[in-house]
Amino acid sequence: MLLWTCRCTEQRTKDETLMRKAMRSTLAATLAVGFVATLSTPSYASAVDCVGGNGSGDSYQTCTTVEGTGLRVKLWQTSAYSSLGGQHVYARFYVNGKRVHTVKKYTGAPKRLAANFPGKLPRKFRNGTRLCNVWSVNSHYKSCITVHR
Image 1 (cartoon, rainbow, N blue to C red):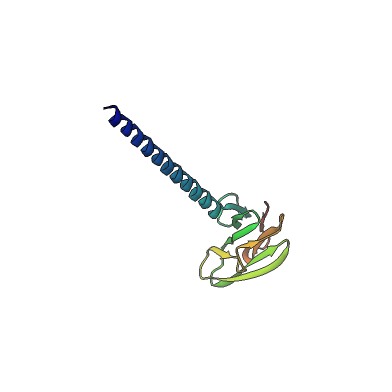
Image 2 (cartoon, helix red, strand yellow; image 1 turned 135 degrees about the horizontal axis):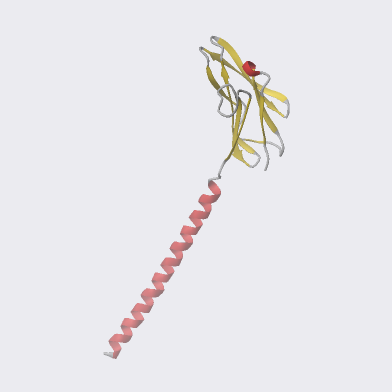
């Protein structure tokens, strides 16, 4: 009887050792996958600036929206309301005060218009760079976002 009990204990000890090794391996693999997933899926920040109109949420505001991480911008979009129908309006994109692109939009009827930056994105900008937009229908309103770390 004692011999049988010893074998059982030895077998249990071997099984427990194998189980612990398997659990450690599984835990290590799970942590490694989680760490890689954290590195490969960056969280993006978003900033919006709207000016003009009669205050927050007014459709007549000119807005700039920028998304990215750190100094890298992945989306730069602008929007404005055009009360003009059947005309061309222009969205102008500025980097530190210098116009870099103009997008022409046609308005069939009065409505809110949006335009994406037509240049290469994602793109890294210097710390402190100001990204601004002006629309021809609201040319006295300039909305801007400052890119920073």
